[in-house]
Amino acid sequence: MRARYAVPLGITAVGAAGLAYSAGFEVRSFRLRRVTAPVLPRGMRPLRVLHVSDIHMVGGQRKKQRWLRELAGLRPDFVVNTGDNLSDPEGVPELLDALGPLMEFPGTYVFGSNDYYAPRLRNPARYLLEKARRQHGLNGKDDPAMGVDRNPWESMRDAFDAAGWVGLSNSRGRLKLDGVELALTGLDDPHIKRDRYEEVAGGPEPDADFSLAVVHAPYLRALDAFTADGYPLILAGHTHGGQLCVPFYGALVTNCDLDTARVKGLSTHRTAGRRAHLHVSAGCGTNRYTPFRFACPPEATLLTLTERED
Image 1 (cartoon, helix red, strand yellow):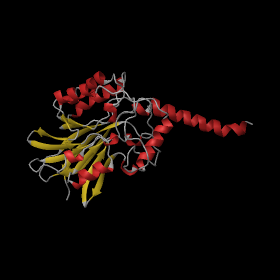
Image 2 (cartoon, helix red, strand yellow; image 1 turned 180 degrees about the vertical axis):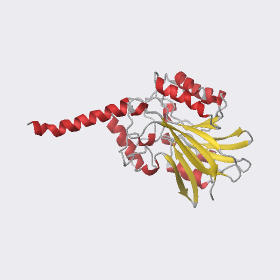
Image 3 (tube, one colour; image 1 turned 90 degrees about the vertical axis):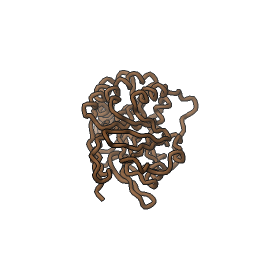
């Protein structure tokens, strides 16, 4: 009788231990990823870009708030925020307090679905299944559900704008950095079908020193459009790096139609005979109702942009 129950009890114990680790330790084990991207024109000085994403701020997340404030000590040339800042309608004041030191630097931002809409309690298994279905082009829901509460995103937008950060929701903008002029192009969130590429089409601006593309969710239609138009670098978030990964294997889902091999970090994207570098941040938070990470620590990335090699 003891042998009969030993295996299922052992599996249950391992599962419980994994759940406790992923929710109690790893989800708060914040990391800084450092990446070099050879994308700048020849003769241009290196640029240091801090890429933050998927903060999913919930009230009371003191360790996350301290870590975000400390990132200002990196003194980047500029900051790129690729959205999903909130997971709590009451979290805006704490988010802005945490990002306050970073907002002293030049920056740009796009929003994700969780900036606009509050999360709701769902079965975690169903949530992950829908992520997998989206990845394979099946019937995952990309539109907010009826009756979902809205987040006070306007106050967050106003604070970012007041700090001089450039909003890029289906728009273009510029940043000037000590003699370097950056042209920026961004999309609103493809995950909820708010992207309107026709409003920003046309490619990099020829009079800028460097052009950068930004989007929250790295759906292939957005990556294809940016790459075909000739952008050398695209920054995105949304995937959480897979969030629950298999050690020595990697992510199982991306929560969009991007392949799992490119779920986080620096990679390339090719279409129409052109190539762009793509950086996807694994983000530093989770939906408040699925507060787990496994084999995928929360992170921000310090990207050093250097001269291209070709």
